[in-house]
Length: 476
Image (cartoon, rainbow, N blue to C red; front, side, top):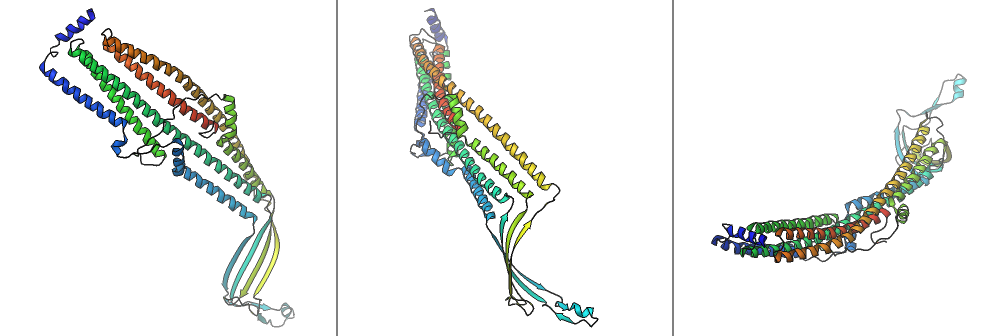
């Protein structure tokens, strides 16, 4: 009672408490404040009215499909697969015969001549006889078929075939990373919208408290400081709502960017924030990750490819054997009709063995370099296994932490709601202060925000755990 009388006397002593100017100003401020709040709530509830569009709800599956169709990163990776496929076909062509042709013209300064050696030996005057023509046209077709290359051709083809498989695994890695990005962006939109709902509820409570405090002030039950305090907290609540709206805009801009849309394109997502316990043991998760992660498969293939590169380098220790077939036409005219000195056509077949037996250690050094690259890839494979195990452990622990937070924050919301209800009732009866109500309102807002964040974090960490295991987003 003493506190009440002090508040009342304080309000009565205020020089502005009974002035006619304040009485005229208060209704205008109340009307403007209510109008602002109404417009803000309407804009928050119907964001598509601003843009004039009425988009349909997009599901997570539809979002992922659209992102996979439009992603420039994924398109670039697919081009890498096409490159690897072309290289494989190029390596296969080394098994097949190669064909070549050439057409040449040669002009001599004088016609070739021939002198019989026996004439010179007998001491007779040499008699030169023309043996060819000044103009010589020649057309040749040659076929060359490799018969043996020390295993180099086969090993090179196998290395490029493995490279194609590795490129396909890298494509799957990019797909999984993109799916995780889209899923996270989708969940961030839902989280931002739920935080806006929390901010709206907070603003409604602050508005109701301000109105109640204004009424108490007008009848002289509370000092003007309480009203000013309520007005300041209401302004802060409006700022929080604006921040929440900005958070939604940024989340949607990120989402639209991933889907390669206009950043301002309206987005409506479905609420998929739901708690479903994930009971898989860590060791089971790790076993799945070691079997399913595309990064491990990629480096395993690269290790096998490096082994084939060693075989390619070692093939140069051996000779190469080729079958060669040649067909030629000759003449002193472009039409290749032959001459009186040479038939118009000829052909031959032969087998050629070539062996570079001394090159100052070039092949040896190439083999050693290939072996070092093979060991290097093996080290990278071991490292990626360790990184995946650590990534999985972190994701699993964060998921369990988020799971614990869900139950804790839900209980905190129940307690904060009851605390706010009691504080509001006590303030209504003037047995509690305005600070008590504001503190209770702040606790309730924080509890609701924490509950939203806990559920959102759980879904996000679950998505990351599945990615760490190499699972698709819809797999269990």
